[in-house]
Image (cartoon, rainbow, N blue to C red; front, side, top):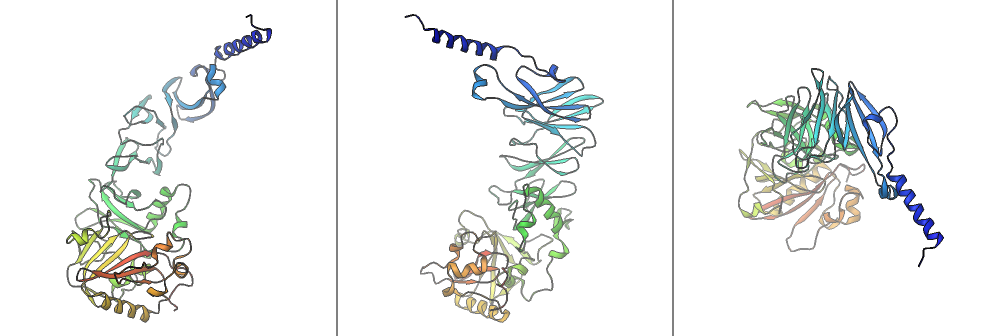
Length: 445
């Protein structure tokens, strides 16, 4: 059967389109000599003798019908190409000399490259580091950038210019909650890590060898999350850290941090341990780490004592502290002070050598004496507790007492919710949650 006139016309039209798409149309414009077919310069950036071309590539042939294509960057030095193709290239400012950062895919090698001049000639130097995502990091100081890594023994690394230097930021411990860079020691031999990039509740110091210090918790204040909210919370978190802490060397010559004067404890409370469980807004101005400058002396970090202690927090390993000399709280000797997970951020928990009935009686007496507004065990519902922690608090329902045979008692205070129950031959006070005091949930009963 002979093809119809319409069919012959259709075949000719398709052939014409394919020929048109596949025909060579040389690039045009002032950068044409550095472009290939299908490439078009969308914008440029000049960095001293370097020119960064931001290019859009549109394929010919069938690809053009499917809207395929991609962006790429090319870096020129004088009249020569020094980086043929990169996913991202942009100026590195604040280095004191012209420099360009380029992300160039390199298989299992680091994709990060720095382009700069040495004695008038271009240098493209690949930076060895753990695997990073498609990023060129973020500035954390003049000629200093921080890169989070996707995996490895470090949470990230710092790149400093010039000369180029790399400083790894250790993870400290596997599965550690402290995984966000918050502060840098002046010589980059120690780092402060936070437990959250946007709403930190504690920081910890890790040195360049990965040795961790003790957690330094902070009181949760109204507006604290707004203080560091934004499109780049990790960058703002470091500004927040710098306003709340300062670097100082300890007696061993190692870097540590101290609280800013405005965050330091005020007049000494009658019992700083008790204050943690009565008024978290004041109690958490004190910490109990063994060697941290910012923390109270007279406490030492110890391992868990027996399987019951090891199993207290399931998969999370708490920090255990023991007083060097006898310390009493709520009328009983303190056996252990723990720092471990809680709603709203990690918190302290307390093990006492006394029965729960005695501890609860003493705790209630102090609440009454201080005049704190509170909810007793039988008064706690999702509706009533919202008046203390706010309706938007994460999983408010989890703070409501459960029907069980443990005999545990819960207590809701303006800045903390507690659970008191038997533990071995004594008592444990769990901090179920700590939170900023809501307006109207203060001292008045």
